[in-house]
Image (tube, rainbow, N blue to C red; front, side):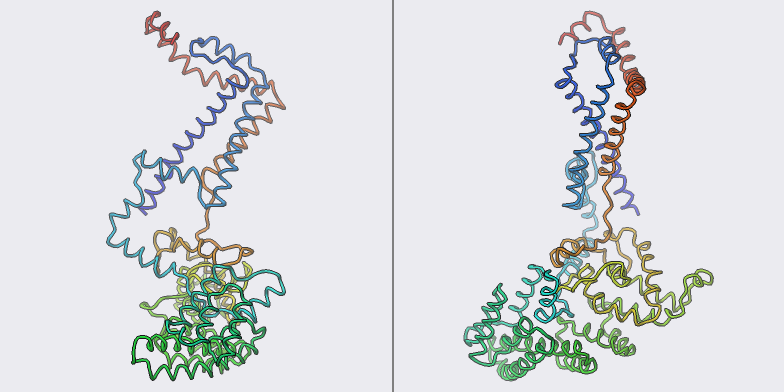
Length: 554
């Protein structure tokens, strides 16, 4: 709270100073307008009586021009502020005040305040930037040829961004290639194929590699990009499994003969795990869910250390489809651990299981009268925990925001992860009676516990500020990226909008009622210059007339 109060006072100080600066800027342009447009004789040696007589002889057209000029200047500043805010997400005036004006006013920079707590703050921010701002491979990513390309053929839109596909190309080069590939002609061709940007060139290279011998990675590429149906992709993955299993067994026997063989065995292991996982996903897509669950369980038993593929998330989704909630709870008991990285699938699946126990009988009216039971409280706390981890998911589950095809990579706690989760799990929430109603009634209560999510979290680290930028790179341009916390309009946009509207109204009233507004303007100017007249009279009475005469001649 102290940090929030300090930040508010600093912002208030900047707003006050910039408000005065803005007003004086407007008046400066008005004076220039008077001098160079209306040719007003504002010389220093003019006495106050001349100025007063000049103000009394001003016509209504002058006041129309005065207020119109002020409104125009305010409007131009408003347009620039709005454009800058829409493009960069911050106010130009506030940004300048933070970087240049605040040090002059003696304000404390955020960096200096953070340095006082460097022992804790630096380590937390470093861990946050590494773990929560990292882009991860989507464990439920679709098939590019059978699903993403079909969407493009139907709608004419590209569901994947260049950044997302470039990350996939890097993953393929990491998992499916090794330094010894140049010794085998087919693998050497595939090593170049994974670097190709043109899809047709990649497919042609895969066919060329298959003409040499049975290459597992070539079958993988064709199954991912050339197959137009899931059935075709499954057939190609089965051929890849046959070739990849043979390579894995041969390299397993030679892995201890040197670093080169060890790297080759690691590559063959990654290829085999990828093929089996995609075969399980094909079975899940084709409705053979029990077969898919068995394949995933066998894969996790055979390769328990390869957690980077997040196969347990595929298993959770398949078990929810079977409504095997006891098995889902057993998987969560293993992976929903404080020492393991979290995901939207883990948090929201745990919330769904707890909501399932009470959602069919939950009523907000009854709960407000008698209070929440222990089971209902646990369900609400689980929902709050899930919403704190990823606040974008509820809008997709409640169908307040339209879904798109999930990207091939996601950012944890970001909009991309929310899309990937809701795309596959919305049906599971709908299947549990009352679960979406409980979510609708309770999810917004999370934000009362974390009023400053970028500074301090409740159960997790503060919400990372990098999610919006990364999600805009991962998600297609036709999708409106969800932003959290919601950015409010800066003070100076509201201030300039009000000033522009006020001066425009004055100009309109002066044009419509010139005599009445002229009376008000003269009264206002007389009141405004009254203190100045009083001070000048006192100065004339105190200073000698000869000295005052010499000063006025300067």
